[in-house]
Length: 196
Ligand code: UP5
Ligand code: MG
Image 1 (cartoon, rainbow, N blue to C red):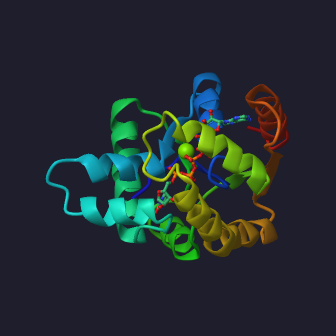
Image 2: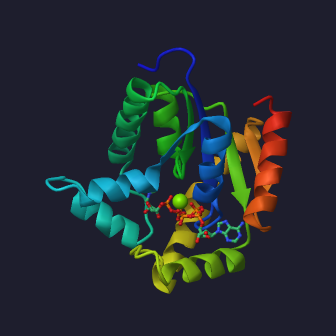
């Protein structure tokens, strides 16, 4: 269904790698539309009358992946709204695909990705960031136990997606340990190299 001229960039990286932070900056400077799969799931979870609320709540707290049908439908609908409304055609899809079945299904049914921005950061730094955010975020998964489960899912289920795209030469890997400003400078440099 995707109209011509649509560009999709996947944004991946461990929990707390800075996907949301960097996407927000890219939106203001490059005019991308930013769609976070996690944010869309949390919205759906809290939407009165949603038939998926409990399923999403349970999965997020346990750091496991919500069935792809739910997430892809939310993304597809959100892309449609953006194209109708703001008329934007360039998308940063943040935190998705984090499982091989999602990657294959999305590219077949919605739109192939141009490439994947991958924010690389060691777990000790991720843990520190997430525990700190947990003091104020109110996110049900920003606690030591959920974080541990999110790390496990990331390594076992989501890294294979990054490896899959890496083999196709479609991963732009960004060292994400520095400050948000430093990371953003690297992002811009890498995007320039990619002709974005
Ligand atoms: N921060 C950011 N950058 C920093 C830097 N360079 N230096 C120091 N601090 C930095 O940042 C996290 C925190 O670190 C913030 O406090 C920030 O200020 C600071 P953020 O930009 O939010 O990082 P991000 O990578 O977006 O972290 P997030 O917690 O959102 O990552 P997750 O991937 O874990 O969360 P997401 O919302 O994508 O998914 C949540 C859950 O939804 C999943 O676990 C899963 O259960 C479910 N889900 C699915 O089932 N399917 C999907 O397709 C997607 C999600
Ligand atoms: Mg995020």
